Length: 172
Image (tube, rainbow, N blue to C red; front, side, top):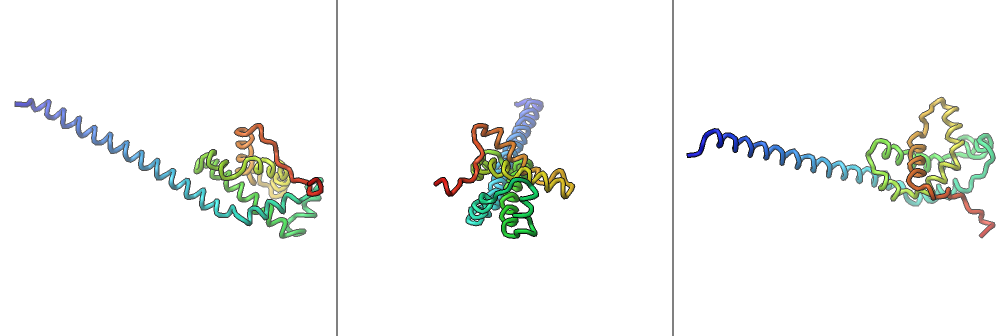
């Protein structure tokens, strides 16, 4: 005959193992669900990254200015709504990608596979003074902070990438 204490110990051990297996399974399901949500969210945002993105990048790469005042006169919201719209479109895409990265919703590797780091670095460096001007103007030090975070992460991960400046069509 089996000792009741041994039987009870085996029962407790089997129950404990069942709970441990359930916890591991649940953690795995949560992890997989989180990754699936992350991919879905990133690809939903990535749908905006199409022909409109290419046109907007091409347009803002033609902008020429010496200082922020000149930029405002040439490409500001009231001076040139189409140019302003293109700049806003691109900067918001990168700002959204920065939010996804800051909030750990998307991994940096995925973000930088979707958004070319060289282009990102070039856009930030070209328009950094405009962003800082807007921060001062609207008195919001966090304006486009996620975009800046994304830029800093790109510079950290890709230190050898030089900023992509627009090509002078006359030099071709």
